[in-house]
Image (cartoon, rainbow, N blue to C red; front, side):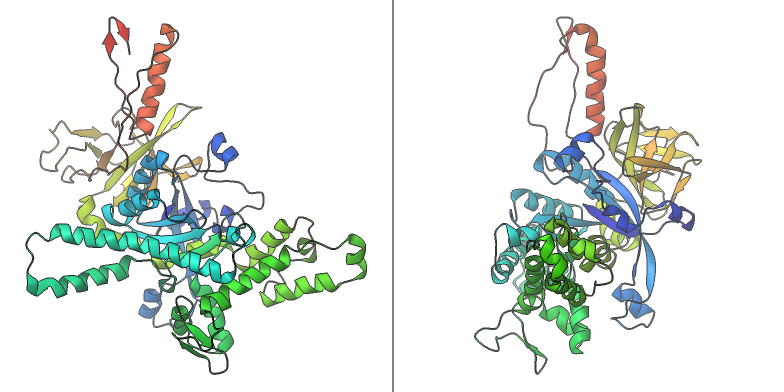
Length: 536
């Protein structure tokens, strides 16, 4: 899953679903378009959607406006283009195309499985090869409670190991590239190189204190970051929020009477603040809500059980949002989810981290320009992958507008991967696209909304390129724009299979199906050969 905040013209705002639509009470999977994805509950093909999010200003924006750094009352609208891509190694080509389209990434890690080989491959491609900023999402925290039955202390130690392993991957990539760049080592510059390496590590590493790590359970519909609890406890104890943000992660201990946080335990029974102020309350909610209901006759005569649940919702500040009917559901999992989704809602937590931590398109291109080769004065859109709509037999190219505004009525040029920007219109790698020959669409999951123009930083669906583009290409308003860099893929074709139809009369249908696969999957190569008058 990768996403980035951007801006869109106001007239399109009414067409965007609100962020809360991502978590439907009927568990509709908006970004899983195929029947197999819906049935198996997994993502197998990348899908994009645009979301309007009304969120607080970033710290830099508040500083520019002269507002208090902890003031979240002033909000601004964000348009977030979100791309959901599969994480399994068998679908690595979808990760490659999604990464090229985005300016930031949410790297999901299953806390049960931990860091896997594919995690290493994704982080290398996301953070280092493409230069987009990653955030870490630790999913399935609920399974630590009711499946592994970890105590809060055991869960904290397990989570720390996962964050540390992810940071080891980032650090190893930084130091490995530094060593590759050093062809001649000057002993006098070693200290400066170490300082630069440490600065890069601080910029790219994951830490809940930095706000780039999220904890949650997608199944139960909740998530949180350190910032939520830092804001709550700073008001409760009347202490600086920055102090809590730093103290809630790592070996920091709080003294209730003196309201002092220090790095050494106050007593032999002291536990880190992340355990006492976050995990222990979370474990308590799960334990209370998962207790079986008393018999109906006892519930009717004795209100003790219901009162205990009401007190719990009051302590979580969601008493007005959760009614008694939801609290007394026989399926205790549904009752738990009703409380957790009101206390720590998933969508606002994710989108708030995206808007605060991940860069805007303007900021991101300053660091990605060298990798993408995008000039400042040209319209440049990269077509990353094709989607075939089976019912209508229409190919929709999905791309990203990196600079300028893409308009359907403009004269455009299709630049092949080998075009260097100096050959001009006469080059064999350039094709002229007449005005109004393309149709532009806003990608909304399985739906496509027709638009006349697309501002920079947005994802766009384009109809009309299937006869000109095989895999990827660059669309520009001038031939002075060089072709954007080719995308690095994690996997390359390693298996060669010869196929033929059972009935030779169906060869045309087989070839058409293989061509659709060839266009949709960048790692597939299709060759048609004639051997003894029989095509293979």
